[in-house]
Image (cartoon, rainbow, N blue to C red; front, side, top):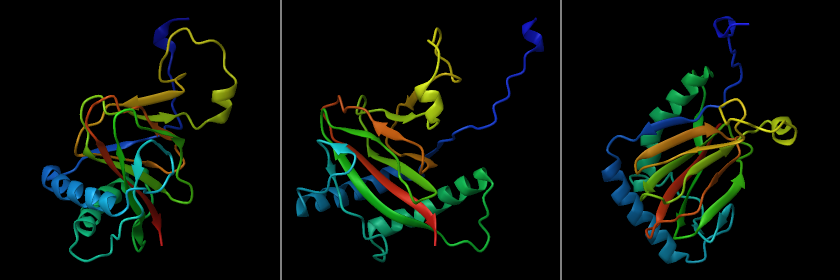
Length: 202
């Protein structure tokens, strides 16, 4: 057998769409102020996947002309583009942001593995992200591959169970809500601020 005769067919990719938000510096300044004001009003926050971090309640994104409302409107073109890349129907569909919230991770804070059921898409947007503030990581959702496989000699995209990437301020990651994901430990001395949201069709 020669390697020239080999063709690898990859039928079921698990995509993460990565965008850089236009005018992200202007948005991030106002978003940061808004999120810290929410934290000041509610120091306890709520606990979800966050371990040690602060998790806000849902944003009031319908509040006209507020920073969170303007941010939600700005996100629409990226959400629509993601739907189109998936090949999903968008005509006469009321595609909406179902919920939106923020998480502040200080040094050594992290988020455990979780997914977002009952939505088509989930997302993470980076308001503040210093170097070494915590990688975004996804786990292979194929349960059979996670529980039964031979010993791996060389890691590659066909056998990897956990993958991730470094993130920067202004990055927007949009991915299927069922995709298990987590955030590694913030090893920087600065807050890591992320906004997450879920998308469905009303």
